Image (tube, rainbow, N blue to C red):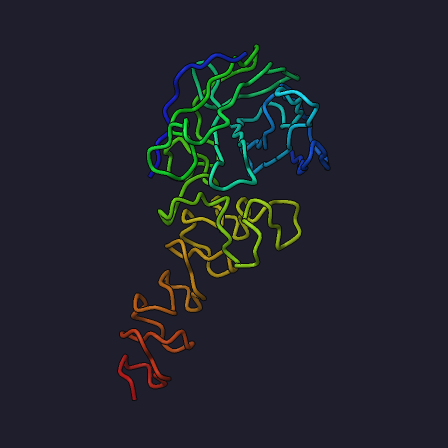
Length: 274
């Protein structure tokens, strides 16, 4: 599991903002503050306490310093993640942002982060495990905002927001998995229409996202977890997938297990095939 390092680099209640191409839509029900700056063609995401999430893309302006503006709730712990080459999986560079002496920022008013010269070439990125999330956070000046190291949307406490963990170790972050196999990555999918991407949803309200491997009580909204990163229809809610040989108590829904890997209609629930 990746552990993010914080080093310095040269760089200067409920709200939802989801946008692309510099645009955004929003619904504001609490006090918010703006984070602005410039970046080289980038997806900017904010992950905050209380399961708040926002994303925008920087606005192309014919230069390598594209302006962006993203809103976050005031007085709330937030983390930023910025991604260059987002639509090119082979060259995608996902960069967690840190702030001087901490990874988490708390705003009470608007701030401008100035120009953030993010890495554009994956070949030059510090990513030892190959999941395209750089191992060293890019540190910027918080310009007067409060900073701390409180974890935000980070169930395993490894310094990476859950969306950018790689729960099944396939070198694809949870955000870019496609758990419902509809051709749209979790980050840009919203199957329940609640305005939150599938990678953020917590439908069982246990504080863990349903669409990554951190929710051990998904029980079975279809978030495909239930104690591992791939549910395959875990109908008996015992934490083991019904459709493979890991469930010794399938009892007979019929996920085709019952103490072996092929049930063939094990109707007497003895664990033996007829």
